[in-house]
Image (cartoon, rainbow, N blue to C red):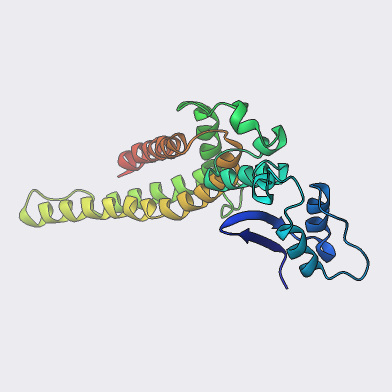
Length: 236
């Protein structure tokens, strides 16, 4: 009915972990700690209550102390620590349950560690796009916005120095800002996609930290927007 068991006695944990097939993991733990062997025909639940209630095993010690000093408890602490600190790699468990105490954990990457890699990856994602037929997203976007700027400029060509001409000039500037407003709205879904990749890959492997990820995305956005704004303004 269940795969894991938390066994308590007077509020103290005696065992917490996997049961195993036919409670084999549970039985191996208690028999390996000094309990009597489960004989054929014994009920596992009754046998467990019997051995944990017995005081013949190590009179100066109890099952609670045995559990606290067991390798299974140390492995559980390691697993709990990993769940609370998901940015640390699984290397902790590979180094052993005592790696946290010994201080054998790898150093946390600095603030600028991996910045060049993050900027390169984000820039590459902008250059290569799935929606572009040629496989290059940036040239397609650049062509579209240049065409819109050129169409806007030709539509309001040679305006008179009148109130109507001033109104048309202001309206032309308004239309030009709408172009970049539409482009900027595409930042959010792309950033969310990059964030999901970061949380699943770079954050788990500690390649670089989240401030580096955010700063790299901002740097790439400023670069591409600057490269786009200059030709659009010239064509307008």
